Image (cartoon, rainbow, N blue to C red; front, side):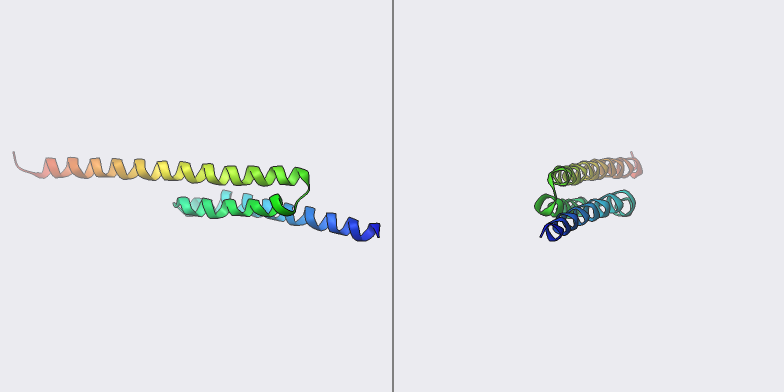
Length: 101
């Protein structure tokens, strides 16, 4: 009976480690290709896997994954709005300079 219980705990740990590894890979390498905050919100959902089925340490890591994903989404959104604001200022300045005095 104990071997079945041990296999269950090992399975939970491996699933949690795989989910965290997928999050790290996607946020570090694939995230640079996308400039969209919704990507990081969807990516933070991976943190639910260790949160729901992992041992105690991996539950905490699942919470960290969720927080990091949401924080990164917020940073991307603020950078996107800042970029759009600066682009609008440059556009307005170029229109103003192009008009004859």
